[in-house]
Image 1 (cartoon, helix red, strand yellow):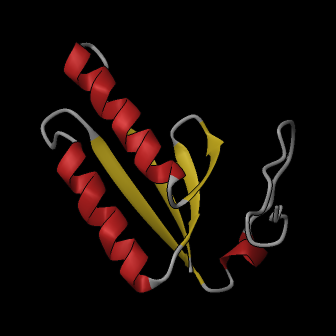
Image 2 (cartoon, rainbow, N blue to C red):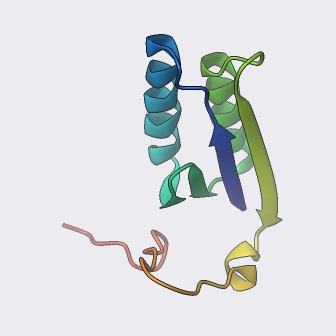
Length: 97
């Protein structure tokens, strides 16, 4: 299924900047960055559960926010992109070495 993960992390402290880096790195393990704090993740239910658990461990509920948008199995068909920086589709544009 396609899940859009978005986040807003307070970076006024060193701890906040560290959380931002850790959230970004975690999201990169499951998807592709489409904007600064937005990732498209193709995951199965088990991967989604692990991703959510990991992100919820990292973020600070008093200062940060996480949002998950569930676009479903046919989510890629619902995405329209306009403008610069087209995003590669990891499912269809995979490079195998």
